[in-house]
Amino acid sequence: MKNSFIILIALLAITLLGCTQLNSKQTVPFGDKNLTKIVVYHNWETKILLPLNSVKLAAPLKSKIVIDEVAEMSLFIEAVENGDTLGPSHLIFYTAEYDVRLHFDDKTSSQYHLNLGNETEHAELEGLLIDPSENGVGYQIPVELTQELRKILN
Image: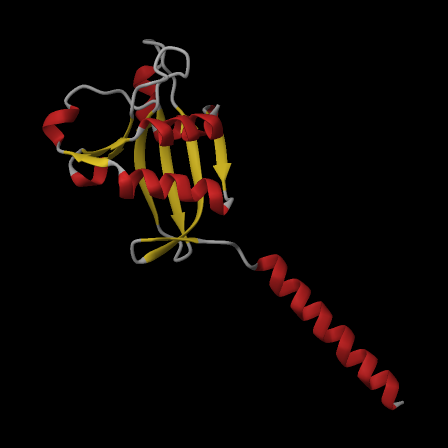
């Protein structure tokens, strides 16, 4: 009877530990929050469809990439933290190639616009990450980091 009780306790402990491990997500610190995933929507680039990029109902129709691996999420954080800050006067004309939504463990999110250009025509150009909530403040992403982001999104 004593052995059955010990086996039951051990099985219960293993079950609880296993469930805890399955529900725990890896996060990446960003400011005072923890990033849990990044959702990237590729915007349409044809003139006819450009106006639909800002329509929220059109989001499910765009191609979407969900990034939840620590190494890949860290690249986006590095783009913000290590990019040269550009004021709104530098960003007068731009079209967002990607809409990027950062999701945090407190169930909040923030949005960015990302431009990387294509690898063949713009291989040596910096990328651009824009925070629309800060009146168009942008971050110029170094070439090496831009190339790494292209690998993830292409």
